[in-house]
Amino acid sequence: NLALGADACNSARAMMFALGCIQALKCNTNKCPSGVATQDQELMAGLVVEDKSTRVYKYHAATIHSACEIMSAIGVNSPSELHPSHIMRRMSGVQVATYAEIFPPVLEGELLRGTGPTQLQEHFAVGKIVYQNSGKLPKISRSAKNAL
Image (cartoon, rainbow, N blue to C red; front, side, top):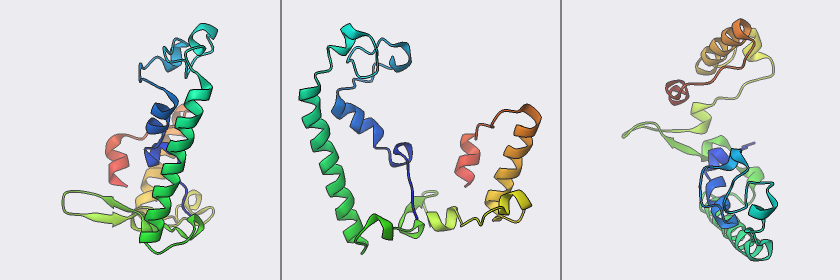
């Protein structure tokens, strides 16, 4: 199966725009001027749900339509038929790889036993050492993410 969150799909930003977000970058301050990300009653009044609900509905419907067109173009009828081999990632100006190549399947317990796919096992080992030494989950650097 294939599962992608909003960050991976890059769809959260557009949905936030449909909702009325103006990217004031005040989400964590409770001072969102558009009323989208605040608990302040005065600021929340700026978010007219009746107006925004139509925009959100239309955006979501268009997104689903686009996803169906893409699935049809690659010959699948349902999201359940999608496989990592259907998703391509440009690795450089001249190299492209499928998600199946970049993220090979991992059987239960393989990373813990040290028998997982090499490119994943190396990242797991580094993260495990950092976690054991600090008790905090490691942040993955951009270079490490790009290496995957």
